[in-house]
Length: 334
Length: 260
Image (cartoon, rainbow over the protein chains, first blue to last red):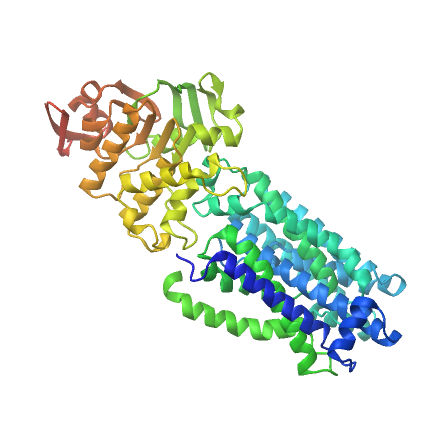
């Protein structure tokens, strides 16, 4: 398929879009701060204390996390769809999101989060990494895509069951409510500590996925052809799976489960890059960042007071959009 | 010059020997037709050479065990057309053919002039130049087959291993295919192709390896291998055989009354 737009142009446009939305995210919030005031406060710190605090400690981490988590979801969605050669693949498929949620729930359930707030992201990330290790062990070293998906489904079900159990046995309704709210996904009230804690993991995951372009292109023709082209599929699987686990695990540990971005974004970008899996990676990362920044701005604009959850909005918008996408491309898919 | 040697290659699947103690010596410049009825073990033998399937016995390329080559080294020596003809994404035909250049490029390197020439040449040989901007998922069976063969040709390896490359092609494209393979053999490279098209194999291949039940039944020039006795014994068919100045002419005429 010839791409309707040249790849460098597309990347440049998406980069500009991300930059604009990042700025817009910095300017969105209940505190009435002027455009110039907020930017000078952010850059120089040379303003009244409250404005600097709002910008640097509330809005900046929120915008950074929005961009990075969106990029993580888009990138890993594109990588997994390419690796598994399955247009329905998304970061949750390998049990990563469900397990990260379970880790977070355990931190809330045990009350550990009250003692040490950072226990939540640490538990979530650890659970995500353990989950993919289990998935890989279940699927075996020379496993094909289908086996990996089945193992992922098994781990997802188990993590979901354990999460339900925690809810079921929850000591008090507040803990249960906290668990449910956390699982809905949000970027509200995250701090720079969250950024410092998880950014290295997301960057490490991106680096692992970024080198997969050639392999994903070769996998377009199946695993036997890819191997005959010199692709080491065991290494590709390790990078795809652990890259996704580390980055999505870190993302989920901060923001909770945010659905549909990882599934929809690669579909949105695929026609624009001529369907080539290697080109889909960067385009999906940028577009994921843009989508999550936009959603997080929308959440704040739609209901400034009632704290509409980000994950609810992405699913609410994402699901019908995905349906429309399927109907639109039905002819070429079937 | 690349020499492929198989020694007692055996593949067991589910307790059965699909390939049974196959030994072969294949030199440079050969165009080999691998013949045999369905289930004879042709694809399995080719997959064993490609290290796609566990096997006993030894497979050497120029004296080195194939299993000890790195993936990258192997990809510069052996090109492989598997039977699986699925294309996962609607990328352009030209991009699919260009995948054949991956073993020759460093990561993130742009295609060189040599890469582009190899791709263009391979597409011209397989008569798909006009399709280069089409989506690879929207081609006919024959167009898909020719695109995937062009991908193999673009890899420009000393040895090409093709599993049923002529399937789905019309007669003119089949003849163009075997003439391309013959020309590749003339240039000192080697083609090993499993084929079900007896007339095609008998007339164009330089050497025929006939296998049945995982064992080599006959190995030699077409005249020696494609005989009424061998065809009856392996395929269970009767055939009229004659020849002209270009080679053997085979016309299957019916089933042997008592199938083997």
